[in-house]
Image 1 (cartoon, rainbow, N blue to C red):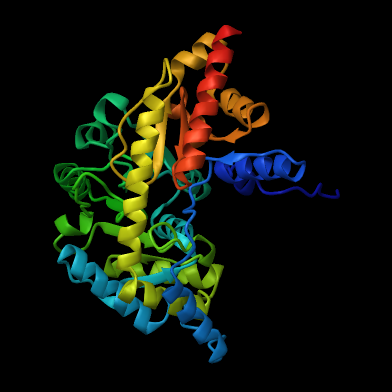
Image 2: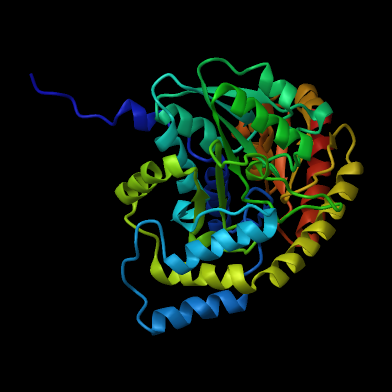
Length: 399
């Protein structure tokens, strides 16, 4: 009997990242002549700093267009290891650093190397959607740790401890966090590492926003509390704080026993990252922090504008974000009065009012009643967008 051809169930269970879907819808409306204010996509509006672009251009002109080793150029891997030592006082072997095509590939490779069929993996919800999809893709069981507004959306050890079991293989943390802007304290991170050690699990730490932090707070990494570097996987990249989203450059730092498995996965997927892009990454690590500090200064100003404008909107509120460049706004009173969910609310804001935001459930089931806005945009656009949202909410409440 002839087989009916169809896509695999494994592939079809992946949930695409909604921010890109909303962006696509917004771009479609723009192509029809509509003016759209983009507050949906988590992308810096800054251009990659000139010195980084120039380093990559020079590399291209000098013929740097060939394969590199799968885990990346030696100079880049050493630079990542050195930067890790500078920032955290922890020495990592450059051999355990693997360069990836963005941090998303690093998440994929980590889960591929760790998760067996039936393993449980704890992850933050609301949180980055690639975690849950990736866990399912490799046959694991996603176990959401609900982030609560009254706890500043932190993934605190007590909540984690309530959910661990003898099947827990890994705990994913993200600080500063997308979409809430929460930042884990030293005790939070240390406590989660101790839980992982006690049960023999990994901590997968997504640190893609680690330099975008405010109010004098400090970023803590699990590697600071894992003295033998046996339980911790660190994921990071260049997209967010170096404004290098289109370059697709990230990395993963693994325990020694996990490195070979991760590198085999990376070899299967992409063979190696682009050579000239890696040279741009070397320049970013060596001479990029002045630009990062200036961008963070601008984000801090924009954050204050968001807080100011949101405070003027009746029946909504938000937790002050402490890192990243997102505001997670509680709109549950609006959705209840209008008799709609957050997905419908975001659709109305885009289609009727020309403001693109992300519905809370794009970031997980516990995001219902919220919308996420990105303030990686100009002050003028942020003010205009939030004032239009205020107008929209008033009209929705009137019915």
